[in-house]
Length: 121
Image 1: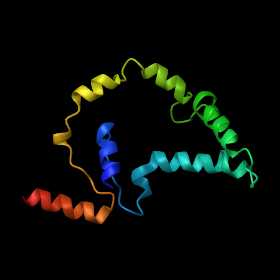
Image 2 (image 1 turned 90 degrees about the vertical axis):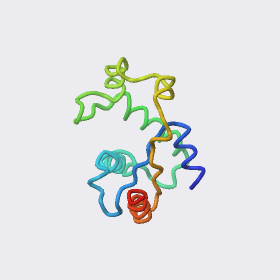
Image 3 (image 1 turned 90 degrees about the horizontal axis):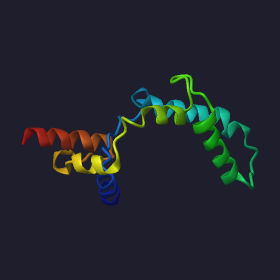
């Protein structure tokens, strides 16, 4: 777990675990997985010798060619549209203060107990 925390801190990523059995708290990931199941995995005939190639092709299609209903354009079109608002890595690094971050534990119930303990101190 320490390696994960160090890696997340190195890349200024905030870890926010969700309660088990609460997929509505992670809707974007759940929706993307459902799309992958319907549009990619359902079409793969196992054993697939070229799975890596097929996955790369699908990933390119999904990000560059497939219009997503929620944004009305491809993810790359949306990224280009927002590119002026996306900070460069140097800016993210400069503004990140690890001392203000609460390091969360991946195990949800343990994380809740640790947070309560921290608040009581």
